[in-house]
Amino acid sequence: MRYAVIMAGGAGKRLWPMSRLDRPKQVLPLVGGRNLLEIAVERCLSCFEPENIFIITNGEYSQQVAAALPQLPAKNVVGEPMGRDTANAIALAAEILAGRDPSATMAVFTADHVIRPVEKFAESVDLACRAAEANRDALVTFGIHPTWPHTGLGYIHCGKADDSGVHEVLGFKEKPDQHTASEYVESGEYYWNSGMFVWTLDAIRKELRKHLPKSMDALEPIGEAVGEGRDYYELLAKIYPELDKISIDFAVMEKASTVRMVALGCEWLDVGSWPAVEQVCELDDGGNAILSENTFIDGATGNIVVSEDDHLLALLGVTDCVIVHTPDATLVAAKSEAHRLKDLLESVEKTHIGKYS
Image (cartoon, rainbow, N blue to C red; front, side, top):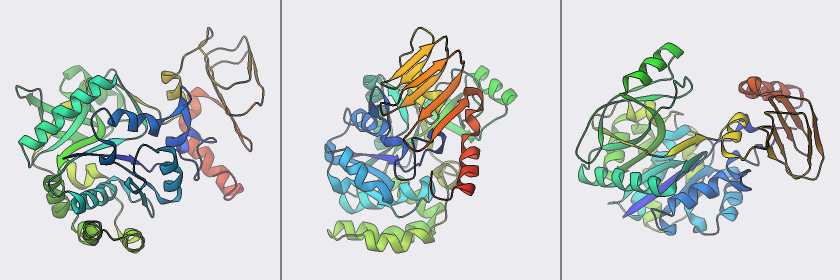
């Protein structure tokens, strides 16, 4: 049977001050009044049954996430005691699924992207599942056709495609400089690394045991508890802090011998920062992205304006700014400086410990 695992553990510091430790980016109503996690689940429902969709999230807000997703069984929302990066999140999910269905096909998706249209997404997922099920040792990843030489993403180097359109993967490349990124795009051989995957449980557990044996040995009792119908959270709280923090790319994908890629023939938008929000919003006549019910604009253009309450935001003659109002903090930044938001938050945290995190 096929299962979807949506990784939704990030805090989203690049979306501060709306995103906080107790209110992650995945539950912010950023896309037409809906949040990214709801949209990710809806997307997966085009390919998977509700009972076969799992969420791996931060334990501190797992109840909040479960409440926001009534269409899924509450037990399918799994809270990590602490972040241990994607390799351990995937290993945990693999062991949980193994306790339930050892012959499963497991698809791993992110919760901070807008991917459309859904029909094309479903076609690509089905192709990747069929590829993994036909070659049960293969790890299948999704590549995004690059539309510009992005230096903030990793790249997948692809070889020839078979008759079904599944590519051999020749290697993974870390975030390149501008010149190298341009060469990648011009060659036509490189795709953006989406961080989404499909594999059989046998394949991923085999590779994890080979490359991340400490985690797999530690997490094996979790699968046993699931298989026996026992609660595993107390056990997980003891195990998880001891695991080495590492991404699935570094731990497994860059080392695995049989890796394939399916090109995701969709629009793929990373909504992980304020400048990215305007890509998924309707703009007014001045090119402003307005996520606020009470805004007055006079001669202001190209701005991102966000507020969830009735506080009036009045903009006069300002250009290319990010303005985000919350009850206890307001951000005003040039869009060109938004990439420094994490640094700003670190400085704020030093002077106002715990107050605005």
